[in-house]
Image 1 (tube, rainbow, N blue to C red):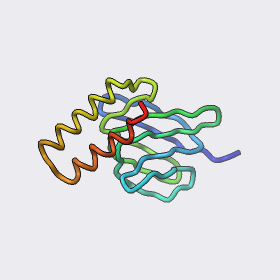
Image 2: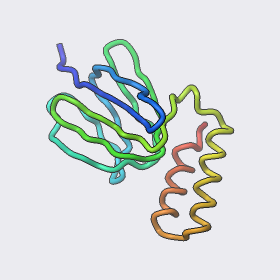
Image 3: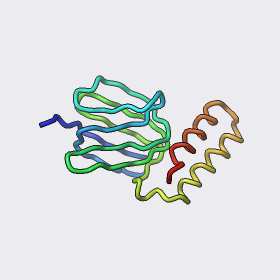
Image 4: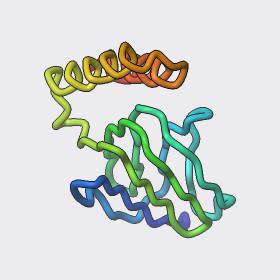
Length: 127
């Protein structure tokens, strides 16, 4: 039997999931990566995208707008700026997130806000 890794996803509003998983796919700011049991310890920032959680009997997806991930050999924790269960993420919610990011970029005009806006549009293009 494969070793499992504890996974916790929290946002400022609530704890969204706490589960033992086989694998967690995470949208890191430097690229997507998978966390599994015995992973090397890392702390990284997140870009907008979907976290996929693979357990023995199902796959769950959550959308995060950004945040931080801490990975160790036994556990992975994600502190998300905002997080949504994929099935609860409507086109209206996605459009509002994109519009807010666009307005922020127009106000600030930095490379970071441009990248965030672009990443958000790409991540939500299929909603």
